[in-house]
Length: 375
Image (tube, rainbow, N blue to C red; front, side, top):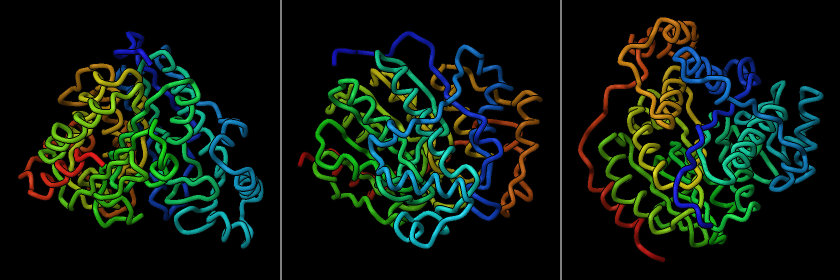
């Protein structure tokens, strides 16, 4: 494709009210609100005018069948209609397990996430930027649920771009968990490069440094305590050179916020500055850019991170102190883990974390060098 830069049109924010009251159950990590709080913060800050916002449609069955099996989709619809799952469907499709519970919107919510990403890839057909914080379900498999993910909207979005005729799509995954579902979906497909930076030794226990996923995958399994300095080093010494080498027509950037230090399901130590720096660095080299959400299980840190991504995409200045309306959005949050019982003041009053700098460990330097080695 011949595009050489970002479209001059305004970035698009794709959201939905389905996330506001939908949870995976009171004891599940996804009991917390995330997308709705991000939307409310952006509106309270004056960053989300009606012309920039679009409601995500539900993806049609025909759109979902581009990647997912018909029998599996039917099982999801049965689970939603009946509020339960048969033992056969649980065993075959992994619906109703601890990781993938039955909840009231078990079909509609992931289909809306997929519809939002597909809307974004259509709207960026000729270039441009979109933010879809409800997307990012990177573990989903064609025929089963996996890791809180019932469908794989990342795969569907990439397929949409390829179906439009794009020659090269790069998938960049910042989530603390390996983007296994996306890597496996495109194993051996030279049109797609998948790049995943994730915590080594964490579920799903895939994505070692030497895993090239059929040739066009790059995995950067980082150690516990991965800090802002190390993220900046990998961005400069590995990620941006990979992008330059591959020269993609579009980039889908999964911004799962569980690599933040306060997240309960990982042991990485990034501040949200590292996410915003990555987005800012990728924007100029992406003829088309869609940033999606993903993991992240502390509602204060996820919402602040994703709101800051929207600010970065629009070059909005981030205030040192939140205005009263935005502060109220955060003060109304309820977070039932230990960290939520006495949250620090800055979770309510700022978007920007203090930077979390540190030494660039030798292991990080080895990861960068190995990532750039040719097959």
